[in-house]
Image 1: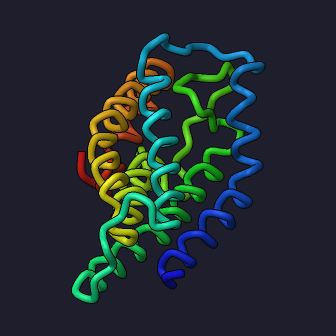
Image 2: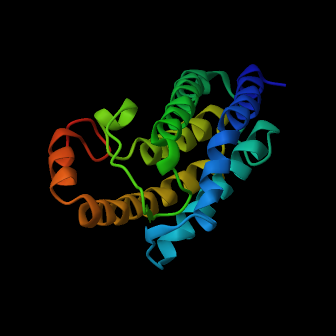
Length: 192
């Protein structure tokens, strides 16, 4: 098997292990009291794309849906691998930084706090930016003609979901969120 594919496979296993506790917290949103949870297709469609990109990533590890690995593609593959590795861990850092506020759904818990530590000290949506860069990086590293288009299609859905979250945070935290928004970037540090 190709060394890049082995590294990606190992990272998938390790990040799953690192994310187990966070995933358990995410499922609590179905049983914990929440203050506001919009009924919208943005609760499901972006998550569906994330699952599809994960399936495409795993398929790519086994060389399903990929272009031939030609030597001239190696620089692109290595850049993709770097992005994939770095941002898969930034994403886990983002989830862990949210602590008890983490949910797989867009909602505000009754005891919700505005998080401004870790990656949230410079970005409001590091988890979505990381998801995009993980998928694009993984697609490049594997030369996947399935994962790359899915990653590109996923971008506007994740942006719309982030905007929905911002509306909720603005309604719930009012001036606190406005002040936080001035100090942080939307997807790019200190921009927007």
